[in-house]
Image 1 (cartoon, one colour):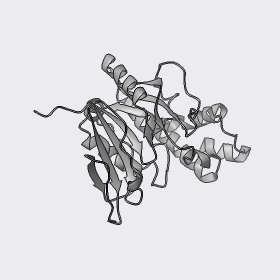
Image 2 (tube, one colour; image 1 turned 120 degrees about the horizontal axis):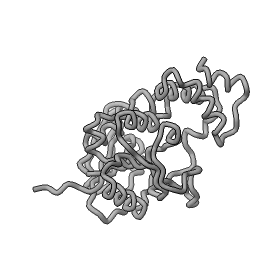
Image 3 (tube, helix red, strand yellow; image 1 turned 180 degrees about the vertical axis):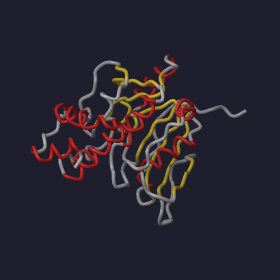
Image 4 (cartoon, helix red, strand yellow; image 1 turned 90 degrees about the vertical axis):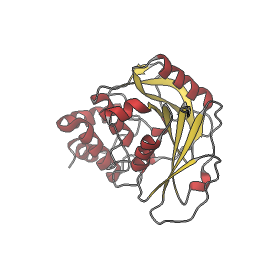
Length: 253
């Protein structure tokens, strides 16, 4: 009888970048999935011993996240990219929380940059996930209870996320869909990953960025999106857009 792994690491990458993948330092039972987007059918070598290869014929990080959920054999799953360094101590603490709280299906933890500084402002205490406090989620901060997510039929919306026109918001939409399905999750103040400082967040304030973010709010909140967009602008740590850009963002025109 095959023993189920405790954890699945689901690494999303492309054929051009698969060489950047590195096996995580993790002492507990685990499996590694390498989800390689390869629409051009390029040749490459996967150098991580015992990693399971899942090759995808199209581009889009949400597609690869969904493939990770589909193929994960582990009880829990953590999402990664080819520029992630995982932190075992924090991951184990998150898993212990899962094990002590069977009602919890999603954990949003923390990440640091190359200097060891937290990548953004995080809550300092355990807090329940809500639609109003999870918009800044990053996938590499997220762990899920695989069976609960699968049983609820929750997937990433493939119209959002890196690799498609609406290049962000896939994590927030995933969480909102899970919460609306009755699943529960928390913010947990432990560091589970290191990620470089560059990200789609650096595009903040451009016309394209505001348009995409407006679409994310429409997807999550429907007719209440304008109110939530206004609240987002008032609370954001980023530089406020001009009045014209702000109005276009709020009313999505």
